[in-house]
Amino acid sequence: MRPSSALTAALTATAAVVLTATGATAAPAGTSASRPGICQEQSLSVSASSGGQRNVARIAVTNRGGSTCVVDRIPTVTFRGLDGSAEAVPPATSGPYVLSPGEHGYAAVRTAAPGATEGHVVRTLSVAADPSHHGVTFGAATVGMGRGIQVWEPVTTLWHTSRAAADRALEHATR
View 1 (cartoon, rainbow, N blue to C red):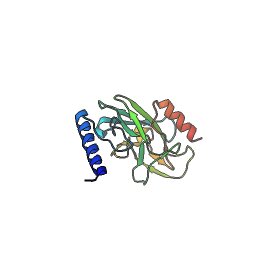
View 2: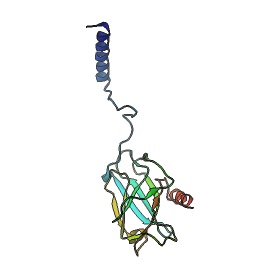
View 3: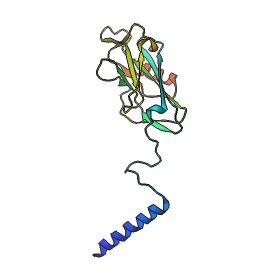
View 4: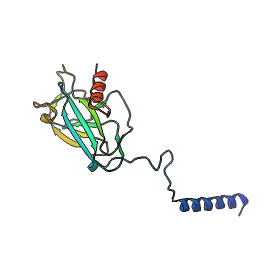
C-alpha cells in the first residue's frame, strides 16, 4: 500500500466512525438535513372564492399537518380543457414557500382582463399548491363566475401571507 492510499483509508475509516458515533446523516450537497420537505397533499387544505372583481378569484392554502413544510411559491392554476396554466406575476421561477402548521398562503388569480372579448369559457379551474400535487377543482360558481370562467392570458400571484397582500400584488402587476 502506498503512503497516500494508507492515509486515505485511515481518514475514511475515521470519518465513518465519527459519523456513526454522532448519529450524523448525510445530506446532498447544497441542502440541509433540517430543511422542511414538500408538503404532503393530504396535509393541505386548498380553497377558492370570488375575488370581488370581474374575472378574479382568490385562492388559499393551509398547512393542516403537524410539521413545517414547503409548497412551490407559484400556485399551479389550470383550466379544464385548456393547455397550460396561469402565468406568475410578477414573472418568477419556482422556489419554496414555507408553511408552518396552521399557516395560510394566499394568491389572487385573474382569468382574463376585465374588458377582454377573446378567450374561452370553461366551467372549472383547478389549483395545486405544488406542481407535484393533483390539486383541487372548483366550479365557476364557487369562484363567483356563475356564467362560466372566461380565460384569456390568465395570471396568478405568488403565495402571500395575507389576502390583502395578494390582491395588491395582482393589482400592481396587471396595471
